[in-house]
Image (cartoon, rainbow, N blue to C red):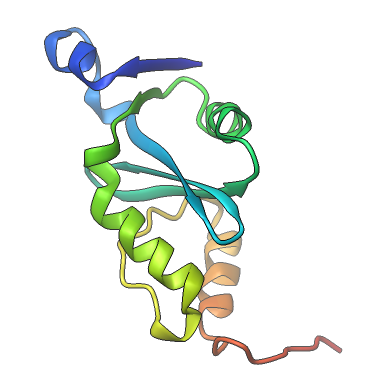
Length: 123
């Protein structure tokens, strides 16, 4: 896993920025939340109890990507996500980078149509 400090990244011109995710971990009502983003949008919202475990998980999900701890780069997204976690009915307005097969993206779009707090059963 490649995690570097933000100032190291700025000075290194050899890094391919197309495979860079900036991230930070902060506390929330359910433990810790890691938010990772690129210039395209939010790639990861991970919940857990340990910052180290969340960073390891991010590295497993995005092998080969350069991961940069940079709290200021994800500040606005993190604020919106924390607000959503404490008040889900408020909604969440962020740009998500959805990866997966065509089928997986269709499932994700269907899940997004379910109203918050609404139970759903499958028959």
